[in-house]
Image 1 (spheres, rainbow, N blue to C red):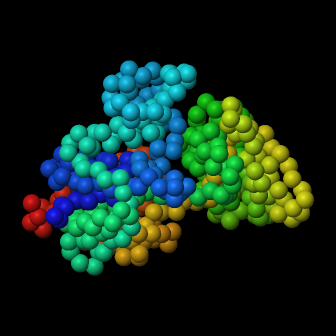
Image 2: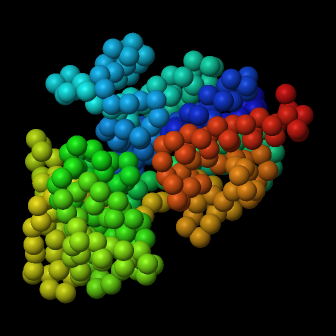
Image 3: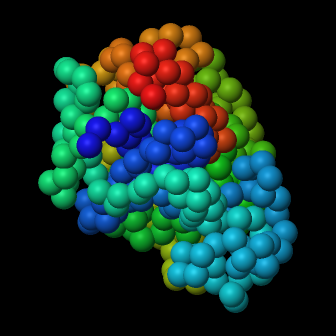
Length: 352
């Protein structure tokens, strides 16, 4: 059987694509990812990066407040093990809850979901052919790639231990959370992204430490100057993170840094949060270079304001094609766009 639309990925872009294509009676098939240890370590398990986030305060329609009754009714039994009843109920929706709501909405309109990874895809002929980790082979008339981009971390064991407990890779997503307000924070990195993260966090933090392994930033001059002129930012030059410090109750409580000039020199900094700003890696490995990407490896839209890729019939949505905004709402918006683009392309080609 040849599918009309296959969606690869299960973040906001994937589920938005699924909702729109399902409502158009295209009967989409979503490969949401496999439950493997490799995916866990890379942050590419089903439900996407948002499933690794705690409170989501900036997604429209989900204001902070006691939503327990709504969530208990909306989320199917067994799908919401994320809320701790001992927590204050007056808080925003969590990332896993929001993603599960999107998933259930897509399934409610007829989306079929398979918990598997697409590991091979042949875009050289039509219909497109793909193979999954589980050995399943599928053909599709149209494909929407919504595999996202994973945040880069240093690879420290202590980083992994405190993810979502003070360790983050998105200041815009998490910086305003109560746990970070009025407290010292740490940002690791030296490029434009790190400068943006550090400058943004000064809106909430009492102090921001910028940790950089060299004696000058690689960021653009204007961005670097903005950080250096900010009185709330202190730069720790020629330094690397030796360990993220913390405990089970408080999460992150600080970091230990080590000098790159004299490795015997270490220093401990008190901090309530640690933000990795060393870039993201788009999840495009399974494409084997068959689709045009930009210099950072993100899928390139070949037509302005359209989700068309360099391969006709293949569309891209969400963070896999976005190296600038990287927000849940922009991902969902582009997922809608990809669904409409795919629907109209199929109609124009006479595929009913």
